[in-house]
Image 1 (cartoon, rainbow, N blue to C red):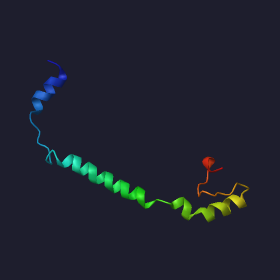
Image 2: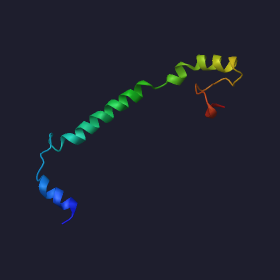
Image 3: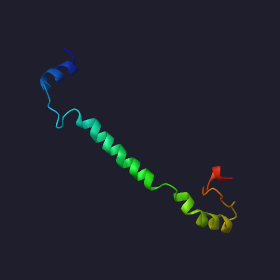
Image 4: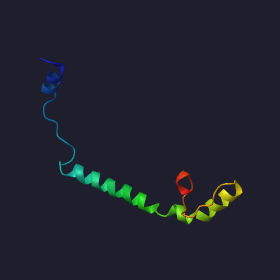
Length: 74
């Protein structure tokens, strides 16, 4: 008898704290909460494009026209 089968026979039946349909529901609610957080940060780069352009001008960088500052913005 292997160790795994011995442990499984000792454990027996373990009742879950929630019904089985609740686990996907909890995962879906968490996914929606994370999507809401992600959605709340939409358009942040465009809201701060003036600040990014001022920083680029002060430090000799290229001005941003798309609101993005970084390697992909040129």
